Image 1: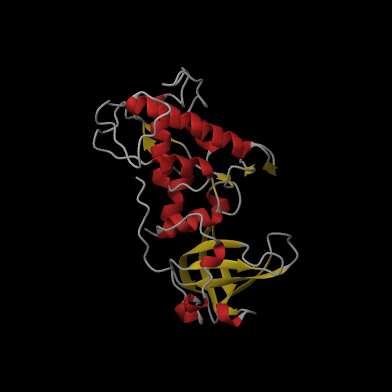
Image 2: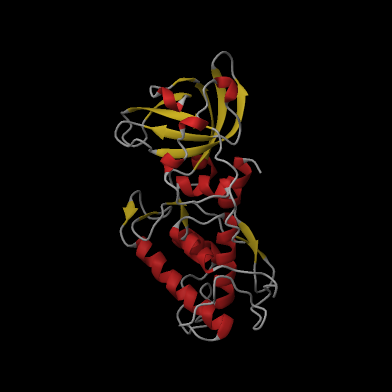
Length: 286
């Protein structure tokens, strides 16, 4: 799957309702991660103190409702993996396995598209999404899956890249900036590479994916940059850019192109290009 196709799974996220099999749209557009401040799409232009704490509370409420649905006790964990094979839950197949970490990732801003879909399906099935009290007799979080996803689910740049590569969505950006994988010339640059933005004030500021590369004459290429560095829809996260590929100021990191840092809009920065990390064992949560 090309990076742009993977990105589309977030920005045009769809799934089938566990209650009636109706297709539901719940696009992800928020930026941020962690149980602290969140950047949201619908509430101004800054970090929101407390939004992450709301996501953490929702995780606890969802977890308890899932436990009630699974085995009837909100205080007993479901285990490292579980199925609804003894007590059916809506239209969810009895053979389908779920992982508690799925719900953490989805509400922490690090979820893969599959993890987010599974979390939304389960949240609907146990009543965290809807108009009635959930299976643990608590009030629901949101009335619709789209509102739940918009208000409580976000993503950040290394979350996108880590999930695309099937690795750790919480891995530090500098883990990708390995001199041994640095692209040393224009001829080496490929789709599926990653792009690490380096600037003096924040050495590893941002990470993105190379969706495609097309010659544009001489040292110039048109690179489809796939990234998650701000809130918004497709136009925020995907843009073809025609750039000149040159040697970066830090030679051990190879080639890339010059930019002005998006961190302060004044500092000269550089976007280095690296080969993908070695194949990793996917976390596989759904």
